[in-house]
Amino acid sequence: MKESNLRERVIMITLEQMKDAMNAGANVLSEDGAVLGPMGQLYVDDATGEPSWVTVATHSMGNPESFAPLRGAKLTGRDVRLPYSHAKVYDSPKMSQDGHLSPEEEQHLLRYYGLMAEKDDVATDQAAAAGVADMSDTSGRSGRSDTDRDRTQTSRPEGDYSMTRSEEQLRVGTEIHETERVRLVKRVVTEDVTMTVQIRREELVVERVPIKDGKPFFDDGEGSFTEAERERLYSAVETAFNGDTTEVILYEEKPRVEMDVVPIERVRVRREARTHDETVGGQVRKEVIDTERVEL
Image (tube, rainbow, N blue to C red):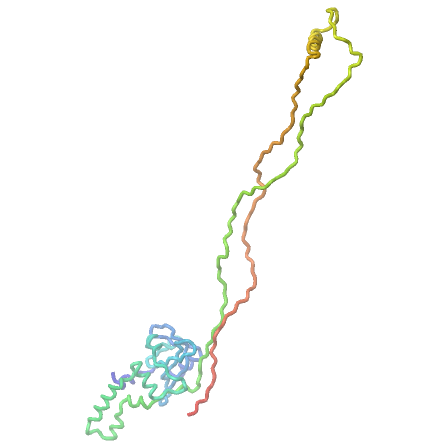
């Protein structure tokens, strides 16, 4: 496709609209509506004063911005939507942003975006034009192709020389993380318990009671003994001097230990939210705009 046909496209965005978009902090969008980056500088045509190029920060800070032509671009809200994909703009040739595009730089960008014929096609068109013998010098000058005019036209930044400065801002929030899990577990612990209890026991106590005026036991059958007294008398007489033995059973108390299960206390666990202040920090980057004087 020849450049003369491409130049017939109408630029839909005016210079005033572009200024308003830049002042509003507009973004540059790709053809599918994805954000390429914030709008950087606006370049206008030296001859017509119409907006022709816009820069967009498609790379990380410190790398040159990408140039994109405004032919076929449209306003979407306050943003500028280009008829090119993200990859097309991202991979575009990087030019020095010294405030002016030279004819060679602009031709290089136009060829990349397909808005200008390649060098071989231009040479063919020039050779065909030179082969016409009856073309006068006047007609030859007036019949120069639009490609030749593009080579002599350059673009410069719009008159206010504005630039968008960006910086990173620290945004701090909170999120919930699990810290620990608590279980209520009962376990059996054995401990020694010492208690004092009174124990009773019987002891043998021998009491000797002297018998005064003891009389001999004699039963002539005429006495007034009862049958019980008589049996005891006979028993005493029979065991006298025979080693009589009498058994007495003694008793004592022994401690007995029994265990009873008794509820002692109820344990309850509940959660409480406590708030404390914690200081956090981070590194943020910001752009600084300096002016440099370039000697021409």
